[in-house]
Image 1 (cartoon, rainbow, N blue to C red):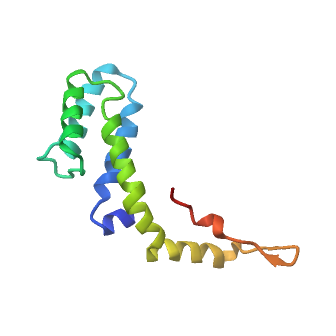
Image 2 (image 1 turned 180 degrees about the vertical axis):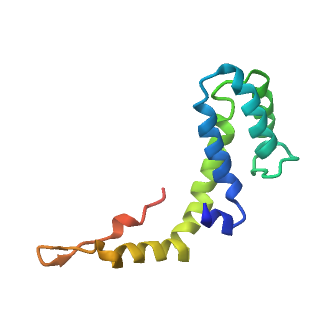
Length: 129
């Protein structure tokens, strides 16, 4: 979240987390009010934390709110996830913040020897498709 905030795009992860929380709502009567709040905060063109969605996804999501279900944000959430995966995540892997975390992890004693050889830490750096 700190990295996304530095890129002025923390609304993406906040929206994704809000959708995950929304899906866990057990009371059907709460779905409508929670859905409206998410829409007003992230999807509406007047939203204070508007996420970057195309107009057709925005409209589809608005229509989904007429009958709020746990899945009414799925398409919008998927689009934002893909945006983060292909854009923000790749930049994060090259960021000073990430490189410092990897370096700190390696220097904090997690480096171990295996049969006299240093272990390879390339697994700490996830690969993007």
